[in-house]
Image (cartoon, rainbow, N blue to C red; front, side, top):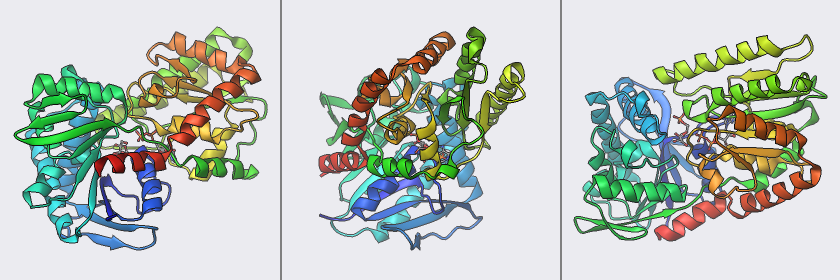
Length: 447
Ligand code: ADP
Ligand code: F6P
């Protein structure tokens, strides 16, 4: 079997990567070996026009730099100010500038040019996520005939959202050059088929086969997972001193998300506020620990969500805190994964309440980290891809603070038996459909 060549916008070259894609791909490549290519995170006025190889991982890694202009137009611009908001149902936050699409096409063309000399016969190419939609088309233009697959980590928009893109038909043209396009959830495949029907020339041949201009393309659902065994071990081994002290007595609710407007953090805080308002006996008995590392901070919408979140946490703390108790603890930075695992295990409630999310790996990490003898309760948004399989969680609508507060109440009061049975069913799914299962199922289908 040939080498796996994975390409993503971001490649982690340091410690503590956050973001579902890098965490999952790191796990997948550790077991299969191969080559991972991605953006170094560095900008330079005149970056080298070749890949830079790095040692020190179980697989080969190669990175490239971007010019500041390309970073602005391709990454902050078209990827994160056009595609990201549209795919997450927030077309109102989209910013359309002509240079964004030019930069996006230019960077994809450059990545293809840099990659081709390093390809070997027998390689399988696996392109990750929305930053790289045009890459297969560019590689085909350069004569690459290897199998090329794409996996979309974020939701695929339905026809109404898709139609807000500057040139929606081009999105389907880009995707039609892949042999296999993978989605996180059935809802995404359904949206893809419906949007393709209304906005493109793609002809649907069957549930998962499409054709355009004599090119055939397949699509499928491959829900991403985590390295459950490793996470379990991490949580069991979490050192006592890494756990939260000074909190004895208060039940912890934990939220772990990049500080992104799609994650529903303000809605979560408002529901927590409603919980405390509705039940004064919870004073000093519960706390919300929100760990939210910064992301895409030069995009206006991200500055706004940071301000809104900090303001809200301050207001709620001002309203309810006592000299011994701060109801919301807000940490705005990444933390080491072993520490994270220990905190999940210590938390009685896992809050995963995005307004839109491809999968959400935090939901799976929270379940894997629990002590099966005394597990916590997962509260999960119906708008996370994870909700399709994790039906034993408390499934909620994150827009409704009353419903979410009610679920928090139910989780606090849930008897041990019910917690155990819900957790056992959730854990089975997380272990069966782990990251190894995800990459194997996808790559078998690509083959
Ligand atoms: P997304 O891909 O949108 O960021 P996911 O929930 O799928 O969302 O994945 C987030 C990943 O990033 C998880 O593996 C999570 O553990 C990790 N992560 C999130 N916040 C932090 C943090 N503060 N420190 C370390 N890792 C984090
Ligand atoms: O999973 C979605 C995703 O956009 C990945 O492509 C990305 O690595 C991760 O979230 C974090 O985002 P960013 O790389 O823009 O910080």
